[in-house]
Amino acid sequence: EDQVTQSPEALRLQEGESSSLNCSYTVSGLRGLFWYRQDPGKGPEFLFTLYSAGEEKEKERLKATLTKKESFLHITAPKPEDSATYLCAVQAAGTYKYIFGTGTRLKVLA
Amino acid sequence: ETGVTQTPRHLVMGMTNKKSLKCEQHLGHNAMYWYKQSAKKPLELMFVYNFKEQTENNSVPSRFSPECPNSSHLFLHLHTLQPEDSALYLCASSLYDNQPQHFGDGTRLSIL
Image 1 (cartoon, rainbow over the protein chains, first blue to last red):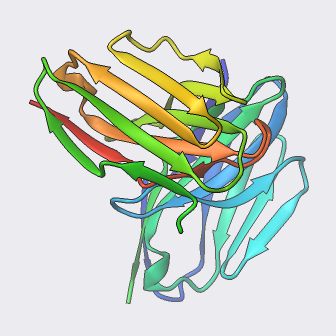
Image 2 (image 1 turned 30 degrees about the vertical axis):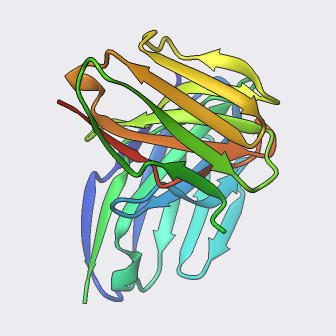
């Protein structure tokens, strides 16, 4: 069964304290892995797509990496405005269906 | 103008009411989706429309009825809902089914 597990469930960081969020997945052939950011009262905002192991994407303080079993979202020197829930989703080969994880709630303290 | 717009943003209804949620996308996308988001649960895909044709119905109860009159508009008709249907309902769109999905800000639905 296709499955996505995100860890940790919640994370508190001091401003400037770098860390990583994990997304582990099992899927019968990966079509794509997607990272989203969701602020309270808002819909998920698209961040990155990764398609194959070894691929990396960067945007400002965020960097996403992908292996055959998991993806990491690295946050370098975070700021309070990076506080949000980060969602990971996978799309299996031959389907348009996204399987979402439950997300990591990130809080960055000033 | 924002890419995916959902109305209303909030809706309170009784179990016997009939209401509709509306989604409009201004991105020129060909696929549209309805999701349900409940606390502590992953987003659940409900329906998928690809070029106006329904291609997925993820075992959703018949009290939820989707409608896609064209590639830019998507509706979710609601009737005889249950308290457990209270959730955030999100609409998304993508250019093609293998492209990233872009979400609206959702309709917060409360069933009394």
